Length: 338
Image (cartoon, rainbow, N blue to C red):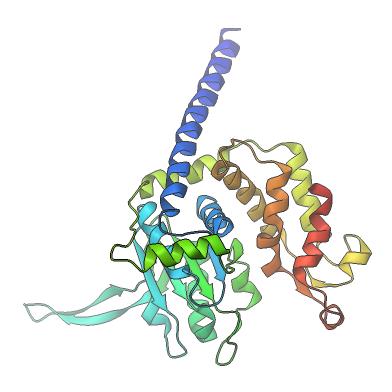
């Protein structure tokens, strides 16, 4: 009986510790979000989705036309979250070594020669891959191992990346000449596709006033890399109700040809795999924290279904010819949860 009481006491203490760390995390996340808002005006949903991506421990693909502060957002995130952030402009002549690094031959003072590994810009905690679809497939694939396994291999030697490690890539949806569309395998490495739209009128007015004067707003650090990692671990410990789990499974599985409503799935050429369900599970927990809650809801599932699924699905040729869109298909899949 004493052992049972001791176990119950330990479990209660662990729950109390998790609750305390969760409350502290909620305060830090709210402060970080407010600090980002002092530099990035409007774009509330974009900021939320990027924060969710990072708190869930994933990588994000930002899609939007030029001039929407995507680069500024990544720089601000690096500052606010206390991360070492770097930016790489992807171009057709960019080589894998330009990202990963390379070995150089050195001669010591004693005349001995040897190779030394010179780290590339990928050895950062937050890497911005600007216009990723402008680089060749060979260079794009150089990111695959790093994004999935968190290390790179050069000349047969393994080099671990810093922790945490996140990639935020940008893509211009307008100019398609001279670009190389990302393959499905690489798209699946991104936890979320975040569409960056134009700001509303009030936000654009504030941008005009705040960014064309003598002084420019600058963000300050709110979190450290260690605190971000602690929050990422907390995300994985948050409770998820059975109803939320079933809703995630229902949405992901119904987005596959032959498994959902035929009226909807007839438009889908191929659908999301299990990684999509894993991403949606983590992202709903992270969104709950960003929204000031300690457990996800059906609203979180419905809100994140599109950014989680749309880069993991494709429409049939007939559906595209009829004017069908992925956004409309996913909206029909999630409508019953809203």
